[in-house]
Length: 95
Image (cartoon, rainbow, N blue to C red):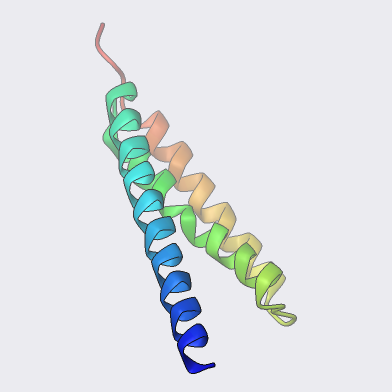
């Protein structure tokens, strides 16, 4: 009985390691393609920092977070979008 439990645990860990590795490689490839496509790498960096909001929404969805300060969250989101707009408008691309 213990042997079955151990083998299931090992295969589950291997699955998580595989998913994590694929996710890491896919994200790096997307970052590389984004850096090729943009004239300002700062934009890619700012968009990558938006991942904090994805993590926050995943926390609400999967961990059933019930209490958070919605207005502070909106204010933070506004600051990120305003920063992205400032970066976008702060330079001109020479043709």
